[in-house]
Image 1 (cartoon, rainbow, N blue to C red):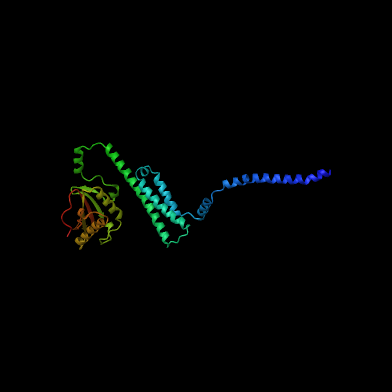
Image 2: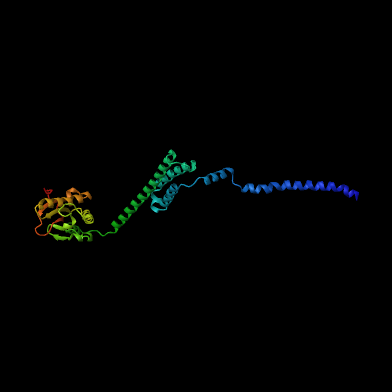
Length: 287
């Protein structure tokens, strides 16, 4: 019994030593797994910085516009260079934003530079899209021209000698009628201030007249004024000129429109007649 008791401390000491050795052998394996799962320190720092930088809505919008343009088949096939320049400008703008960690005042030089680069990115994206739409339009036109039947020479001659086509619905309020001198439209007394040459309630009608003249570039227009009373000649001339000036302000060429006042209305009521014809305008201005 005493011998057993004497050996007991030695056995306990040996067990402790063996247990400690086992723990030292297993410890590296237990600690190595989490270390392998953890990202590198530099990656952790980058992620932390990105979390600290708020996104810039304008830059994100520009990126979305670029990606939307890139999905267009014509842009992606023919105008990748323009998109590449747009992306390069946007990347520089994003770099400035990230370097400043999104903390920029609108009067900072970096802010102005970033805005300029973002503007260039959007402009280059828009340019690529506009080029693509132009190319698509040319292709459609070429396709239509290739499938259109050839015109007969006699049809072309007949069209050139024909009177102006049917009057658009927008001009029906001007009481259109066809005479030997051409297509006649009438601006009545209700389209002028009483006793004055100032036009009223006529903008839509004059816009329609201009559209008709633009659609038929071979035509010319004569504004013929008629009025009654002691100052009939003067007022009719002023009203004719007012109509002429209104059309000139809308973009009509001066060489295509004349104005003359004939004075007495002859019982037909004060008015300005717009005579659209295929003949060149006369060589007078109404004086």
